[in-house]
Image 1 (cartoon, one colour):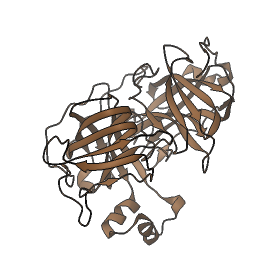
Image 2 (cartoon, helix red, strand yellow):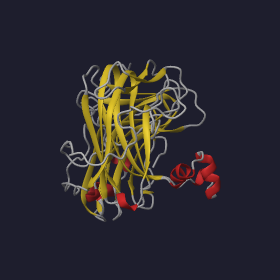
Image 3 (cartoon, helix red, strand yellow):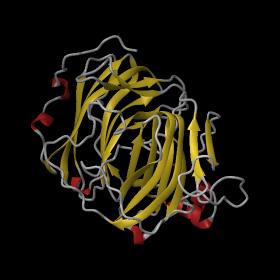
Image 4 (cartoon, one colour):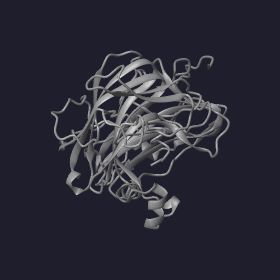
Length: 409
């Protein structure tokens, strides 16, 4: 899978879903986090709560705090505040927990209380279940990550880490009192690290308190219907919280909900901007379905795209996370330059050990110009090997719908 999604772009991932119903708050069990209430400080540090860390953007526009002014329980709460979106970044508090086989085939539930203050963007909580041997051993040995990598004899470009499960809950209300948020993730075999994050993408301030990470009996994956769109907010008519924005930390790279250039409905999503960056990387929007019922199914992903003077390719990406690796087909069609609304499509057979499926609408950033995406769909066609009639047609036969474009921003 594209590695630019986390932690600084997340993904924010697929929003990842386990079914169509919203998760319910779970009964508390043993809390796996150190200092979930942020009460004790790290030895030798004036204010950093024990067990926690902060994202390292080095940007002067972000502030991390721990104070007694606003707390829900106990003496302390923590916060993250940001005043600029010139460079897109997912600023966050995080804690990493080393786990073993005792956690495999269970669900982990991450809960935290949040309070928003002048947010323009999205706050979030997030839990990763991942296999990261270098990260695990750096903590076991108490050495930096690069030192652990050298001890293990792993080259930088051969790092075998894999995101086996991930779930993020965004919230975009500008002002709130204390609200409890929760996300749940299935822990596949071979997971050795679980990471939780509490953060902000955008400007304003979000407070966090009373975090909890518990292990519970795994819920059975919901059955998923054939021929029904599995994506949430596929036409971008909502608040955007169902989608992850995956952007590199380059100046003026943007991802915005667009209401003047649409394929249908009232909105699309627009990506573009930025002219400088160390390398050209994949950027876009992503949504994932974390549901083991997708294993062994034939899947079809479609979306409409329109380019406006785009100097890099725009395309779709579809792949599955398995126990071994991320698996998916190559990109069948690229768009660039200026194009009318065009339907892009791809299919794959999900392997039998699929844990989650990812759909991406992306382009290579930074690049001049813009690309718009709208009306996305992910469907189950049936058992693996069952191709749709449309898959035999050339992509050039796709007939663009009526163009509702007005003057772009």
